Each structure stands twice: as C-alpha cells, then as structure tokens.
Length: 208
Image (cartoon, rainbow, N blue to C red; front, side, top):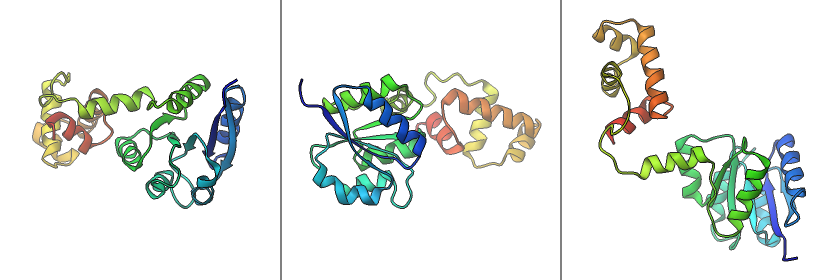
C-alpha cells in the first residue's frame, strides 16, 4: 500500500477532536500523527513533524488558527493547511485564505466530506464547503449592480435608505411604514442577497 497521508490537527474542543480522530481512524490511507490544542505548541513542533495535511480550527486559545498560518509562512513547506471551523462569514473566509489556507471546511460537514476533502487537499486541490465556495464565486463574478437579485420595489427603497446610513426608525418615517415592517423587509433582503449585515447588503446590491 502506498504511504499514508500524514495528518496533524489543531483543535481545542474535545468532542470535535474525538470525532475527527475517529473519522480519520476509519481511513486506511490516513494517519493522524499529532494532535494540538493550541496554536503555540503547533507553531513550535510542526516543522519537525513533516505532515502532509494540517487541520486548523479558527478560534483557539491564545493565537488563532488564522494567525498561526500568517506567522508560519514557509516554516512547514509541503504541508497543506485546511481550516476546519463553524464560521463561514465572508471576513473569516477571506482572512483565512489570504493567510495561506489551502482549503476551508465547515464542521457540519459529514465524515465522508471530511475524508474526501483531506484526500483532495493532499492531491493539490482546494476543497471548500459549498456555502464557502458560493461566497467566493459571488465575490469574483462580475455583475451589474443588483443583476439577477429578486428584490421588490419596496425592498429596493429600504436598501437605498440603508445605504444612506438611516436608522430603522428613520427609514420607517421616510417610507410611512412601521419600524417592524422595516425590520421584516431587511430580514428578507439579507436572505435574498445571502448576506448577514447592512454593509454586505449594500456592497452586494450596489456592486461596491
């Protein structure tokens, strides 16, 4: 049998660590060689371990997983790094990728998805959870402002006033509707645009 994929993980949540250990243990082509519960220990030891794939949590005690990648640079060449986290917000995703992450998988992924991602990463791919990949596509795809986004006329009015920096009550007064109605419109806008806050919604709609 060919050499197994040597894997290390940095994860401070015992249940998650146990689960990943169990999943990797079912794969005959993988070997979990080291477990870390903080980034500082990993930073010190990784250059000597010669692992193929490093699984990194984002939120860690002390140094974050993203900071670890940023600081590591060329300390462990040949090691592919995959973020393994519950966070899929735009800021965290792009920060991780800019720091050097080669893949980005959410912890809600199935055991098979985790194994497939580890193999793909080892073979030179960049596995990502579908929601993360969709965010990347949305950010790099050129489009006209609001192109293809199904907002109603009222929702467009609300979003335009949001872009001007008005508060919910101010928008309600300007459009002669209740503040609760404004909140409902904004919730719908966020859902339709697949965003989580005012800034993302404005940038998405107006192409900023």
